[in-house]
Amino acid sequence: MGRSMLVRVGRVAGLGVLGVLLGTLPLTLRQAAAQAAHPSRPNIVLILADDLGYGDLGCYGQRRIRTPHLDQLAREGLRFTDFYAGSTVCAPSRCVLMTGYHTGHAHIRGNAGRDRPQIQMLRPDDLTVAEILQQAGYATALCGKWGLGDEGSPGVPTRQGFDYFFGYLNQFHAHNYYPAYLFENERRVKLANVVPGPEPFGTGVATEKRQYSADLITQAALDWLAQQGDRPFFLYYAPTIPHANNEAGREGMEVPDLGEYAATDWPAPQKAHAAMISRLDADVGRLLALLEQKGLDRNTLVLFSSDNGPHREGGNDPDFNDSNGPLRGIKRDLTEGGIRVPMIARWKGTIQPGTSAFIGAFEDILPTLAELAGASQAVPSDTDGVSIVPTLLGQPDRQRQHEYLYWVFYERGGGQAARKGPWKAVQQPIHSPLRLYRLDRDLGEEHDLAATEPQVAQEMAALMRSALRPHENWSFPPAEPPAAKKGKRSAAAPGS
Image 1 (cartoon, rainbow, N blue to C red):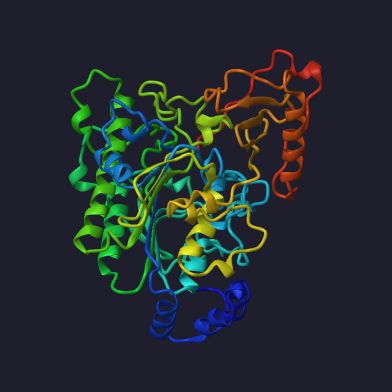
Image 2 (image 1 turned 60 degrees about the vertical axis):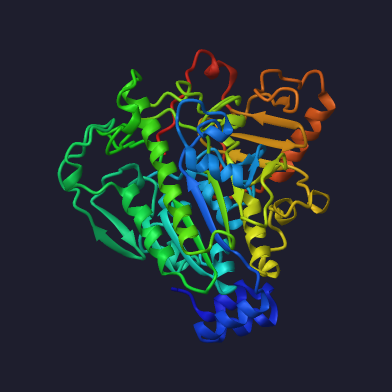
């Protein structure tokens, strides 16, 4: 939508003659031809939580917040222990997920803020995983938070490969769980949320007159899923739970009711935070139940992850329920707690249940889903991701490994990090000395080995230099002279 056929054919030229022909056929013929070429292709449901920590799920060690449906998903699928988000904040992380480029190469490398929203939008020539699947004959939908293109721009989901969209376009709008409107495709849908919202930490006030956005997004996903027939589909379900409401004057953890946590003696924000996660779990359970009812659970790959580590916003204390588990740091940190996330993959009868220590990241999603769709030829040759299909199919000896993973961050004085095998390098702020950790012996990143392993530190520093491609929209702050640094406190980053 919104782009010429010539542009689309050029964008997916890697599909070869079949792809070009399919792009010119009527939809029904295109579907039939694609299905004939790849009869065993799975349906795909990609679920992305917002600010959910590595330790927020029972299957990753959480002891007090109940997540029975996600725990069951992990028991039935493959639980990754060493999987990483694209970034430590939402927009760049979602850009990596959609495009397959790490933040050293991606177009969107940060949360741009209200002053420069244009730099946080995908361009007409950016290729997304949704476009690859759409051109391969998949029905495509996004229900939830997008964050990669604002109203009227080329970056909106329906111009980036999605047949259907319902939810939030930018993250500032998504900070409110009781908004005045949401988007359906490119049209605003007004909601009955014109009176002041409920108490910030969830009291259930006036919920009968108001519409909680997470409920509407989940229902839209269920409705779209229920309408799918024989055509393979890709559902990207991206709820905003458990992100805080960061709107000025309404900061808090918004949820209609506190459920089983109402009777605890916890602080109000922690009750609401836990209730949001259990609500997310229940919503995922509804999606899984619908797949089973439709007889699709054995022909559908379900992926679950989070866009970055846990937050300290809206009154939430990530330490209260150990949201980052054994990891150090939270959202906006490049230590493990800010970027290592849950990752669960279930495909009943195909993926054998278990645990994987494969070191992967969001850039792997695009080549993986393209291969499963029979569209590997459409993957750009310079993508930073690798297909993890061999790992999913229990063939680790065939799995291509990453040479390294890389992240760059431009807030809070900037920073960068890389992982290569067991080694992790972190330079945050960007002008500070590089810190070096060996994760297989020091998961909490407590022991800096840069001084005792200078050769490894030098290799990691060189690797990070080579991984970062300059971009006109993104730059680090200049180094401050020593006198200016003395005694100066760092400014807090805005919520996002």
